[in-house]
Length: 77
Image (tube, rainbow, N blue to C red; front, side):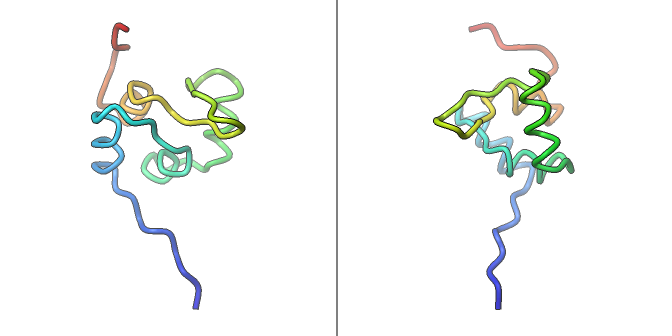
């Protein structure tokens, strides 16, 4: 029997971003109905902002909220 990763809901990802935590590509892909590969390609094309932790891209909170359609304009730093 194989183990499956828990299903992440948009509200959980949104709460994580609103709490100021970065979002993993796999979590964002699952709630936006995009593939992880599509997210990675958009990051490399600079269409999605990301912070690199070693070789792993993480989506900043404001960018995650924008992609979820919760935030329409950038937050001033």
